[in-house]
Length: 83
Image (cartoon, rainbow, N blue to C red; front, side, top):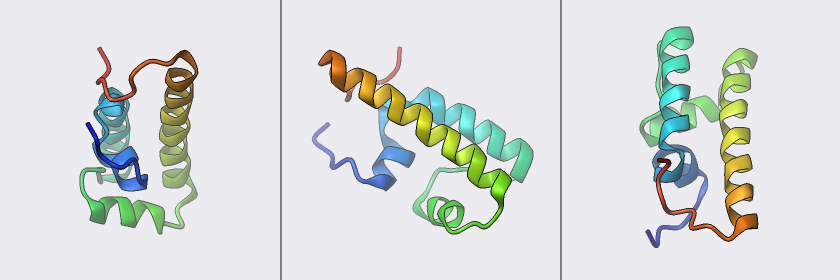
């Protein structure tokens, strides 16, 4: 709580997206033998030219943005983790 929602926080640490991040990490582990759990992983994915990897990551970001927007529209607290 009280953290700045920059791109690293959004993708790596925000508790609101924990379940989505677990799904992403499972896909990354199975398809690319990688994971997203530190800044180096984030930078590696963001600088990748692999269209399949970028597609998987883009879907994760879209899912998170959709949840974020729904939460903001309803006035719910985005700092709560998924139940």
